[in-house]
Image (cartoon, rainbow, N blue to C red; front, side, top):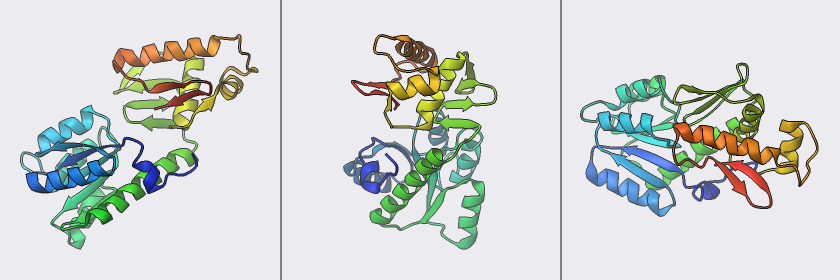
Length: 238
């Protein structure tokens, strides 16, 4: 998959966190997005919104500014110390300085209220598409997807900032999978790029490395299935 259209994005079970204190507005947005295929979690105050945004994995956050307990911009500032999850600010304060403050705090987009659902969906798709393409086209020293962070220079894996001991082969295997998220990488390709030898159907070493890597990830993320086996084809990340 070389590009993600808005139609294909809606089929990817994308998790969205909606932090909005108006129950009617929140439910309206959540229902519309759910009908388009998004998985939407709702929070109604800033403190619980920040807790959930840091603790769980979301591909996108929709954030109101005027929130009880903790205002949206303070929430965003604190979130950016932990995660780079894309954020669209939704606010009745749509003046130029308000938008500048939002972007300076770390917003990826700023949509003044009232807004149409069609415009919100287009902006969401654009941000998700851009983030995906940047991850695909870059060749960074680090790869970060949700809680997982790989550092190429240190050959290290961190989950929730906890370092996980992995072998060089396990690191390279996870690097290749995370570098190509949601793409199936064939066994011959992984043998050549990770194990530096030709593929043999009788050689089970790749399966062993995959199994060990899964177990190490599950020690920190119980029940996770980040590395998927695609029968007859190979493996893919998520």
